[in-house]
Amino acid sequence: MTVQVTITPNGRMSLPADIRKRLGLAGGGALLVEETEDGVILRTVAQSIAHAQALAKKYTGGKTEASVDAFLARRREESGE
Image (cartoon, rainbow, N blue to C red; front, side, top):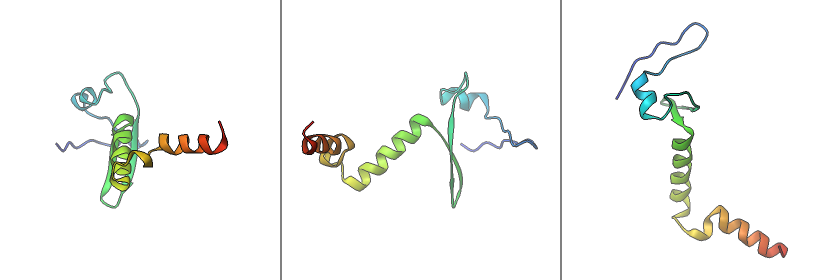
């Protein structure tokens, strides 16, 4: 779905209500802005977390020993905690 929005002279833009509702932003909320070579990507915080997790899984092969939790557990074990 592509929607054209207008940016005001002070830099504000409005997302259409139906998009805000689908994203869970009907009552307001935060979006993260990512600038790429192809343009700008707007993501909710939840979408950004899911995107980061997918990238991490891609590079770790889904190995549980490569997780942050596993890393922290190893560090605690090494430090004697």
